[in-house]
Image (cartoon, rainbow, N blue to C red):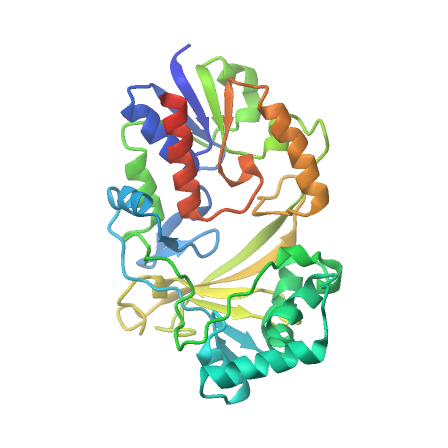
Length: 371
């Protein structure tokens, strides 16, 4: 066998694991089905702007070890995620904070905002939420739910909130301060030059082959290495022997506009159900210092549409309901019997995890594997 490890997938998990294995003196081959590395955090330059091809990605973490790790491969800018929600002709700050409440109800103090939310929760009288709608109203009241949660959530999941289980929303972050910073983490930013450049540096010195479908010649690729690291869909690896896990997918509509500044913010969520897309991303605003758009006469925007996932589509969000979680448990049990394969990343673990969590998991798995 030519290699110690075959890493299937050049996303962030596969790249970090490959880097750790190479640093430990192992010979590693990384193969990737797409024609580029970096998975869903892939960025490419268009009109001098780093475009996030698969939706907005902002690195954020409170894990100092992970923060120090990424800084070895990228200079992080000072971007702070402060999305705007648009409901019909009304604009609100996210996450839900005093700016949101002041715009919605005209309140000025935290005490007034708390009283308004408590009043609406009390009026709803929901003690045992039976679905997502009842759960959301019991947490934040009817106004916030109707304007900022309902339509967006129904578009995202492709089902009515009354048909979605309550456990999907265990809590809704409500902040009684005038602070539009979406994340509560200590560290936050986007790599200067884009995420692709960062992943390139993580993979530096490791053999990478893109445009390679592992399943097109599985026996051949298995023969190349002693062990495999698989970052794709775990049910696909086992030929869906127990059934197919479900996902939500996304479609993207990107265009270059001959204006300096389209919407004045990197991310604007459209929470009205009648608008088919969930958000519009204006990529130049991810680059700190370009918020006013005056450094470039053009801009690039992307409309993001949720979609029903079908075989062949990109899987973005696992449907972690009871049925799918029970099915995944069967695959997880089967995976544990295959010691020659390590399953990693969002798809290998069938759960939505943030980028910093993926990196932490890859470092932990690599340390255990290479010990």
